[in-house]
Length: 349
Ligand SMILES: NC(=O)C1=CN([C@@H]2O[C@H](COP(=O)(O)OP(=O)(O)OC[C@H]3O[C@@H](n4cnc5c(N)ncnc54)[C@H](O)[C@@H]3O)[C@@H](O)[C@H]2O)C=CC1
Ligand SMILES: O=C(CO)COP(=O)(O)O
Image (cartoon, rainbow, N blue to C red; front, side, top):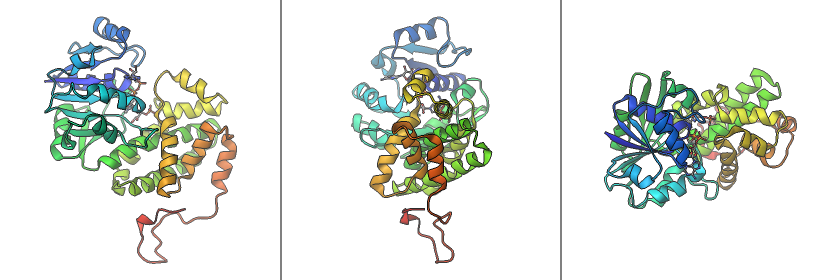
């Protein structure tokens, strides 16, 4: 089968390896001519996946229309803030019966929309049931080395998810389907904020107790905002929630965690972003999440502290003191002293 992958960065390239291993011909769209030439000529992508060989059945294109022409399965793997622009280019070029999978972990900063909302708005001809999202603990560097990885694909219809399960799944890449598009999109996006916080904490030498606290309380605030925005809370106990949170907060491959480490060394945000040379989604998502949480009336203390460090020159040590000095709380909404719990209370805890 011919499958188009839009985005020849780390993730688009690694996903094209999975598809190629499964016997598909991949049309990998790269924005830059030099990168397409490197992929087609030397069969490498040194900037994004150094040391890897691109399979022969992956062909790079620079013209998006050519990449998707006659193709019924399209994967979108570009940074979140460029999805609107790429989906707008895709609109009109997409085959009418095409299935689209996005593998993007972010929220549109200008509008607060999730990526499926951005894509559906830009491509009015694309039916909901033909769109799905892939997420879960999956660093490109490890997928490219064919190390065992599990992900979820959430669709608006069973077929919208199952079609991708059968195209992507192999003995190194296990795909579970899911029906909670909102939860899977939010889990994959919001964990990046916590990973920046963990990087800061590790960089300041705060230790393993602090890391566990950030991850656990971070998951708590992700689930509370997610629930308020329509997600199923248990989704956050799965691969797209705690699974991805664990890998992003602990892996040396995580760019979000590394960004936190670099900030803790006293580097400016601009320096960090330039030095990384790859997208650090959590920086944009922190801004989007703080705005969404304020609108929704959901308290997100870790996201707010991360926001203050990223954008308001807050000293990270002071941010931690503020988190530790918050008024005393109960851990969970379920207040067995008061009777049955009410998740929808949101509020402050
Ligand atoms: N790298 C990873 O391990 C994983 C990444 N993701 C997600 O995949 C998405 C893409 O990330 P990566 O591939 O890692 O980023 P990357 O920084 O490695 O590559 C981004 C690619 O997008 C291209 N690009 C930048 N601006 C563009 C524009 N305006 N139009 C078209 N292309 C543009 C760049 O040239 C580059 O090829 C992100 O949302 C990320 O969170 C998800 C799972 C794993
Ligand atoms: O989402 C990821 C792994 O699942 C990638 O995380 P980073 O963007 O922090 O590298």
